[in-house]
Amino acid sequence: MLAIILEGYIDIPSDRFDAVARVIPQHVQEMVARLGCISFDIVPSPDIPHRFLAKGTFRDQVAVCLLYTSPSPRDLS
Image (cartoon, rainbow, N blue to C red; front, side, top):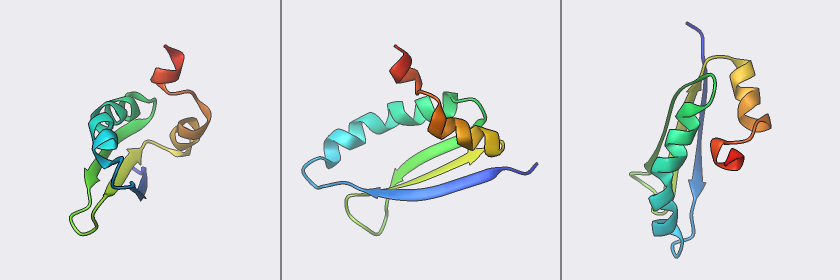
């Protein structure tokens, strides 16, 4: 199976790190629930303080496009 893997990171200001860390599990659940998302995870960087590493695997280009063009489940409530 061919899939598209997206990897990236986000650096968080130290005064907001704990607040962001608290909402990551919900964000991961929302991402995995999206059409065409095979897997998605966000973890703290083992090397750089206040950085999270993200990796998502998507079924195809359509799934990636939907990621950027469709509302998240949170926006629909």
